[in-house]
Image (tube, rainbow, N blue to C red):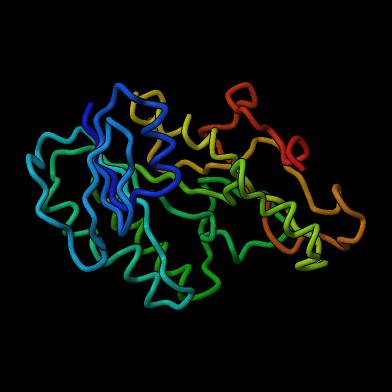
Length: 243
């Protein structure tokens, strides 16, 4: 199995480390990896894809958008600027495009899943929606929407509680990196074939359940998945296990 990863970062490096039987080519801005099953090409994909040898031999392409700022242009550059080039240069590869549950930002105090009609709240959300619409024009493509990523080194839930970043109550939409890695493998092994998949823990939690300082009804949506929601499949089922 040969996999090209555009926007090779932490998730990709962990995925390559766990799957030594796969051969990877990783496009990243800096720092080559020392994994024996990864060839690194140092480049900024936003400026254009490099020449890729034997491009027709890649079974899969995984695309991780890399945002350099919070403004709409950064989102446009990261998400949509190279989509047509990716499709043109790698037409036969199956593809997984990483997206974001930010597309649900305008929903409040409700439960949403992949069947929900999206309502963007800002220009950045509109860009991500357009990104997904372009991707879904190709039947070989899948979308994995990541919620808040938790790793062994970084836990945004603990940071919110410790630093009191806000006091309004919110649903905690999170996913542990180990579960993202399993989902990616299931997609590549064709055990998970839905076109759009929300990557989020199967149990709904609110900040008020962890700290009484968070008050009121949730000001955001609880995100669920109809395609990947069996708790037995998850290493980390709820944030209560890791706070």
